[in-house]
Length: 266
Image 1 (cartoon, rainbow, N blue to C red):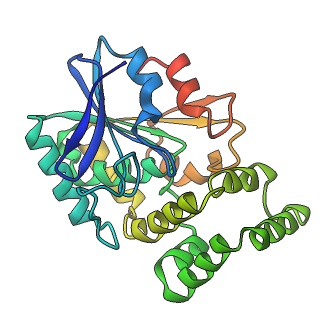
Image 2 (spheres, rainbow, N blue to C red):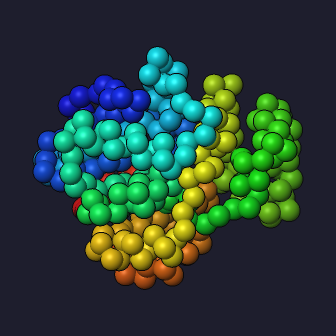
């Protein structure tokens, strides 16, 4: 069970456990800090896990402390985390990220390499640069198309179904997308997040070299049946950092955190 839940500066979090090993944990898009509850329950005696709500996420996403900028840049994220670490008197720590949280975890590892002991990536976003996604989230024309698709879910379903029939889109990915876009609030959250997070990109070979130099242990956990972020998306990291520990579990995307907590001791 979480031992406390409250905001610090602009970052809201849930704290699990009281052990000596410190984790910062970062959830996927459309989720919140409770995503890492399975790890919190499993590691409560050995770890202290600060599970952070990403910008635009969590129960206080639109509260008085949630005045997020239109884009979340690396310097902005660095300032937020530096304040958080100082407030909690955290010197060294590990960082874990799932899905979109993996993108934040990679950026955190780049910005704080000399203070990180371990990087745990669960089906991480941000390893492979998708030019279509970059165009849709970082250009005015792309954002207009993205906004139209999110506001016209019937049309979105028709296009997605057609792509599935043409075998250009996996059915599991379409189901995942539609599940995260059911309500207007979800669609607004997804749009704000995707368009705000696009500056958070990583030079994978350069990061791999930094991690190697600082002797940061890296663990990559993937789902064998993951249609959202399949293993192929992480190949650039595995090529750049072959010593990375790779774990593949017999699960899909949405169940990966729970399965990893059940089966992996880190």
